[in-house]
Length: 167
Image 1 (cartoon, rainbow, N blue to C red):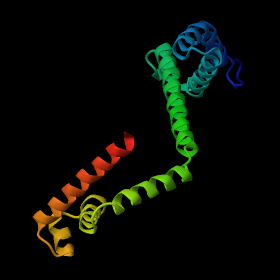
Image 2 (image 1 turned 30 degrees about the vertical axis):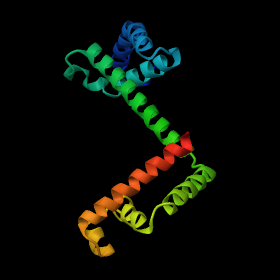
Image 3 (image 1 turned 180 degrees about the vertical axis):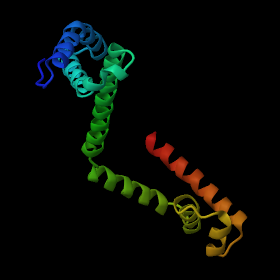
Image 4 (image 1 turned 45 degrees about the vertical axis):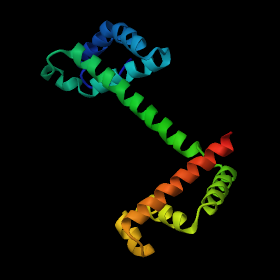
């Protein structure tokens, strides 16, 4: 690695540091990444970041430790970016199956239509729309205990119908 600078002694000291530490850093990163190309890329990036601060190298207590920390931070950053890219890709590639959804809607509709109208109303208000039984009772003009009873009967009937279908 060779960088242009006005001060030849600064460049020489950096070149010497690179020669002394390159192999150790590469081996450590190869061990961490398990991939030669990734290890080489991270090694080069770490030395580049160090070169950017080389004029202030005297303020760093342990240059080698700093180099390794920069390299490992680079590895973590690459890994986070890769994980984010994978999550984004998975989110966009999971397509909805319109036929399966239509079939499910038809099944749910058919099952609900087999319930009594009052059971169906209680289930829809309480379970689907999330109303408390008191509010659903007010809408249905019955007592809250009646709504809870109708919803319970409706759920029991749906479970029974599902078991019959699976058998």
